[in-house]
Image (tube, rainbow, N blue to C red):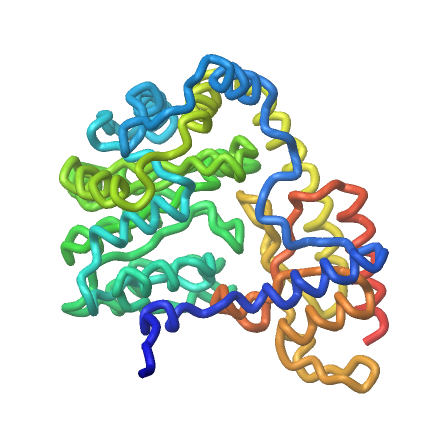
Length: 398
């Protein structure tokens, strides 16, 4: 008798970055000085005021179940943040607190998708979007957004991709992996398409507080009642507050959608971590001094890294406006040889950089662009300088 395992689970593609990550760890374990540009989390400690509240919560015995969709205290803090930062009115019954941004997105697509429903995913995209959609029974529809359009999807491209099976479009601003930020005018045009075609917008705004220079964050749901009614806004504590391990994400949506997400979550996880919810409440309502200092440091690193990359041969990038990544075009290296080995794509380039120069970068085939790599500047300036020196040395040897 042969017991067949889940076809849905088998459809999920393992990340191509895992091999690079495993190799980097192996080299480090052997004592090699590996510079890792793969960081998807801030290299700063969680702010001290947040940590203190969490410790107090433990000592006070706040260690039991909470309501499945989150404490009223945290929902009120999220509601206040949505109002003041995003210009959005979400009442507490429209908010669901989850175990991180991935869990929020999993909840969203669990309640939106019926088998065969299509979700438009602009590429480059965060590599988990397609897998979360597929696990929910949906079909990812990719729309490629090239360098000439700053890696941002246009309203016309979304319109062209819509079919009678389209249920939603994902919008990520600021973007992982590109750091690009959608302007208000761009979002207005997209909102018009979403409303006219009566689909949903899933707005992933996890990096919303990490925007630099004169750019500002705009939530698409803030652009009128019609788009507000069709948008699920998703954010969390991981990036802006250096709380990746605490696992707190949250959404704002219609009451109907929020109720369904809360019901699904109640059976999947019971509730988000009680202590982390206390900590997140302090993060949103307490001192913003440490998060602001972190943002200022990211801004300095961004400028240094961008200036260095602009002077290098064969590679290029558009200056990121937010998040903490550089999305680097390596297409000019394709077909070049290094020590007799041909560079065919970003994965082969990443292998050479790691094995020959002890620099770990993220090849972006799983982000929809197999001729790009992603470098994170969520590592120290000293490590950034050392790693870029090694990359430059490699490029000069081509």
